[in-house]
Image (cartoon, helix red, strand yellow):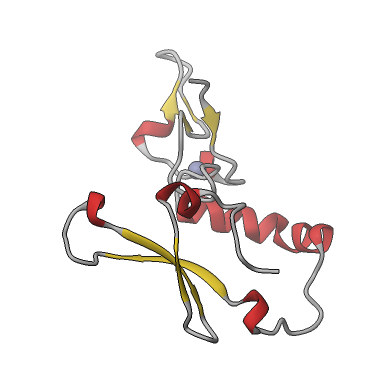
Length: 124
Ligand SMILES: [Zn+2]
């Protein structure tokens, strides 16, 4: 698997042992590199690095993708969220997945695959 770099703008400035890389006389603190990261869709090695990125680029990113200029409204049509509970059991295999409408409280069953698919939604 290809290694990826933490996208944090100041990652190399956090002087931890694992960031100190290079040959004996030529060691420098370097941006972390891993096969995957826990934060920001696997782009950041820590919440600190994610926050650093946002501090630097956040406003530009929001302006680029469209700044919200009026309130969104939760209505029956867009109130479906995915949820699960442990109906009748314990452990991952006993999870019961469903859609629940935050306004009407209506529930509809989901398969695990549908639950994990970010593109699968009942919202209009
Ligand atoms: Zn980092």
